[in-house]
Length: 86
Image (cartoon, rainbow, N blue to C red; front, side, top):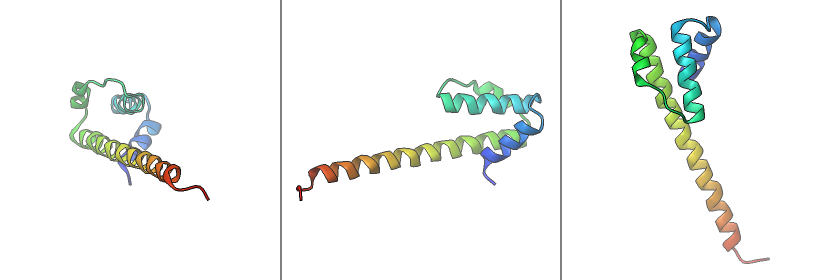
């Protein structure tokens, strides 16, 4: 199971728990591309901290693939524009 789904379950299970609040803030900051204090991650226990790191890794990888898809779309458009009219 992906880390993001694990965090979703933690938040849904007890949204007012400290870890759920930290995870909620982390996800919100990632989505909004705003600042997040790494100090808050140290308030998590070891397993929760590892899960937060997994989310960061998944988020980065997903952004890479989104960027890759955008480049592919632009490349396809350029090829279509450069091909001779039929």
